[in-house]
Structures are given as C-alpha cells and as structure tokens.
Amino acid sequence: MDEEKIREAARLFLEGIGEDPLREGLMDTPGRIVRMCHELFAGYGSDASEHLATRFEAPAGGGVVIERGIRFYSVCEHHLLPFFGQAAVAYLPEGEVVGLSKIARTVEVYARRLQLQERMTAQIADALAGSLSARGVLVVTEAEHLCMSMRGVSKPGSTTLSFAARGEFEADGALRAEAFRLLGL
Ligand SMILES: [Zn+2]
Image (cartoon, rainbow, N blue to C red; front, side, top):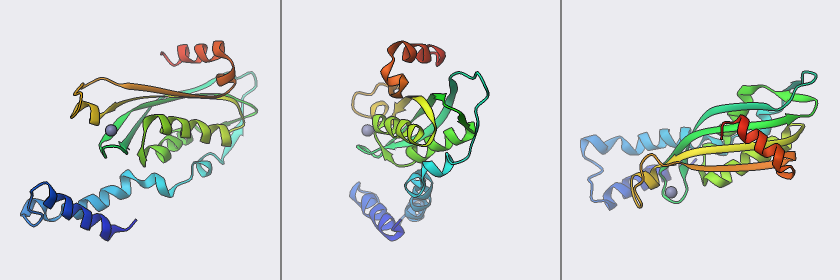
C-alpha cells in the first residue's frame, strides 16, 4: 500500500468537505485511516488457496458439510461504505474435507477488499470449488449495506441476499433446494 498517497488523499478529502485537517481532532485521522486500510483491505495481499491447502480425509458416509454464521465486514466499491453480515457455505466433499476455520478465512480473503456482494459471493464459491475436492459448493451471503441504510433509499435493517452455486449444487435444483433448507433459507 502507498501510505503517503492514502494520507494525502485523506487530508484533501477533509479539506474537500469543508473541514480543517489540522484541527486537533483530525490531525491524526489520515494516519488512522492508513492503519485501518491495512486491516480492511488485507485481502489484497492474501491467497485463499494457501488457507485451503491443508485437507483431511473425509469421514466415510459423510454428507453435506455446512458452516453457517460466518460474520464478515466488507466495503462497497461504489460508495466506500461498509456492508456486513453473515456467510454460509455448504459443500459436498469428495474424499477430503477442510478445517472449518479455513472456510471462514477464505471468506475474509474476499471480504477484506473493495467489493460488490455478488462478486464476493462468487469469488468465495470459485475459491472453494477450485481448491477443495468437492462435488459441489454453495455459498450464501446476507448483508446490510450502509450505502442503503445511511443514504439514498434509507432502508435501515433491510438485507441483501446473494448466492453462488457450483458443481452439483448448480446442476441439481433439488439438491440446491435441500441445501437451502439445511441453511435455514
Ligand atoms: Zn454502495
């Protein structure tokens, strides 16, 4: 990251909205924004396939693996405002499973970037489908967008759902419906 550019941009932005970037409360704000950017946009520097490299033998007779309630925070690329919520992942293992924390890490890799919810959901599904030996992957995300709650149509509390299906979950509507049921959707 070019920290000086971020600091300079923050100073210009503060001036642009009519603030005084040198007043006491704002003096350290450009530096705070730099440190925040390292956290919020850490996904640019990480690769989901590394997290998914460690796999275990799937238990015999196992069915769909589901992980729900994976909290995420991302930033909408249209407004630079947060959108946040929960992701749920279902996959059909073929011989191998991955540690559950690795699925949450995969979500983080794609959430911590400037994003669109639909693209983030698709990227998580593609990363899982590409790295896991799975017959199918289904990713569902539900998020509140501050660009909708704080401005524009101003609908606080409303959420946006997005899903991406790969493999058998894409090909087989009944299987997908069953997974949605298990996910409580
Ligand atoms: Zn937005």
